[in-house]
Image 1 (spheres, rainbow, N blue to C red):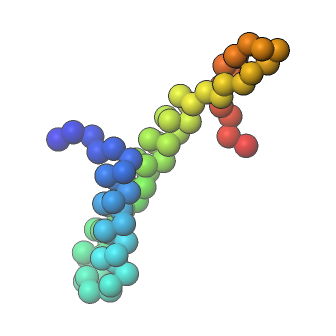
Image 2 (image 1 turned 180 degrees about the horizontal axis):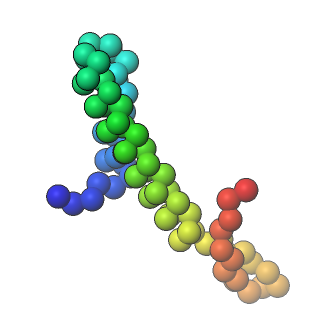
Length: 73
């Protein structure tokens, strides 16, 4: 199975949250869904961290374009 992208992961996470919020699942199923949601959340964070590493900011300095690595503040 191919690795899900960020958008697919977020969609799956939203479905899990909706199921949990309905309150119709039994305890075991709720715990299982919660664990699945945590796993997906961690994967989303990993994808975002990898994307952050790839982002560069282009700045125009003295008429020249220079690349600088992006750093989150």
